[in-house]
Length: 465
Image (cartoon, rainbow, N blue to C red):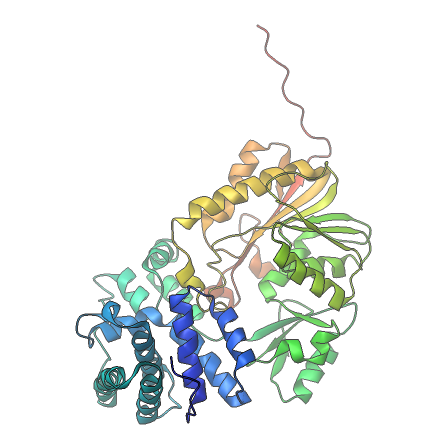
């Protein structure tokens, strides 16, 4: 690729670089954006456009590819990745960014393509984008979508840019309209969600500081220490973040520690703790008094947890590198949290590329991992203690089916209803904590409270007859 050029639209140039890296290196969008922001000297306005373009193209990739396939002879697969992503970049602006004139979207994309891929590629991008732009100018659809009546799964998958396997599951569970609402929610921008460290600040003070910066901020209607902020911000550079007064955490995730009935002096094990959002809230709810072992198998992720704990001033947190599938403590803990690795199908609105990183086949391995974590935790929980299992998944295999299977194999445990611990709208008929994005306008979440009998039930005596 040519040396960094001088362009009228550096945001588009760096967006194309990011999209190329995401596709060719299977890189995560967030990490790529962070790296490019560090190396590129962009104005705040161009940084916002860069993020909008990269996240938007990533989210709408299936829809964009469907439309482009009708205008690219031989299909998109035959194209160089630079050209393929330039077409996506230009079409996203045409279809979804009303504030950018169509001529500017085409012209600037063609100019960037010329720099990275040459005149021939620029001519192809120009021809394809101009044909589609002309149809849009006439009020026509950019391309015919699959019929909703004949194939609702294919229609929703293309129209709302989701994997078909996921849409198929959601249509079966929530119906066509429920699946449509869920997919639509996942494509809308979400506010930045900040949890206030109650041991260092008040929500009122944090909201006032945000408003003094000209940012639109409002308190969460459900969590007393969460502030919702419209638009993006460089959180790491904000003094209140550096002083340990806030941490980024969604409302639904921040409600999970309330299931634990925490108080000072408890012995708590957070079994999948990194990067530390729930761990630090547990420490807050304990008043930073007691024992809180924060275990994770990944050293790099534990390092981030340590940074959060130090920044926020917690002394009760003890990070431990350990594989949660294997018990490493005696029956010691009063409370254990398993924030289990999962498909993450409830948080697709916050992670632009997450929908493309999972396959339905992943469920088998993840549910096996979740079972192993539950089995290990059961052995480290003292009699009378409570085990809280949570995910950010909407899939029953990872949620209620996992819990019912555990209870069948462990008669010494009982399910404790979540009523009274989290807001009533989030407690379902079975007593689980459950947040549905398309119903509650929040990230999806699931939680179950399992209590171990004060004395573990003894095995039945052997039958000698």
